[in-house]
Image (cartoon, rainbow, N blue to C red):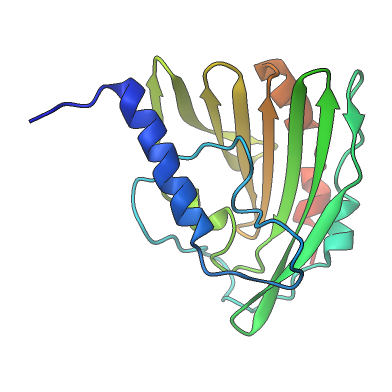
Length: 202
């Protein structure tokens, strides 16, 4: 039996999850927006199928508008420039979920902050949240942690891809990615988000 090396396994898992996210069943309220479940440069590793967002019943709350989420996207840190934010509402079952995103640039480096209100539906990044697993290889790592008291996952993939997911109240998801930057850049963007304000949204 042929044994795959970690160098081969890591990209294969990334491709598998990207395919799963691209085929996830979400219907957009706008045809010119991108599914926030798939962010360019993001890498995730699936461990098991079927993710459930616990907490309130699906549809038990109304998602906040994407314009509200946009107001929580921070300005660019020193040395970075921010692009115009974008947002969208997505239809799911008998309800909606929303997201807002903003890109930031510095020379050849690019960062993205995406905020998602799932309204407790199993959508977007919540679809893969429970499938993340901690690991470390010569090519990168996934590690579990907390950000401002909220559960998080951080990843690194060589040479310079970084990302963090932060789950807020089992409803909101904050995703931050940095391509062509450093771990310090990632933490600067992660720490620029107002998690307390997001947690207080109703």
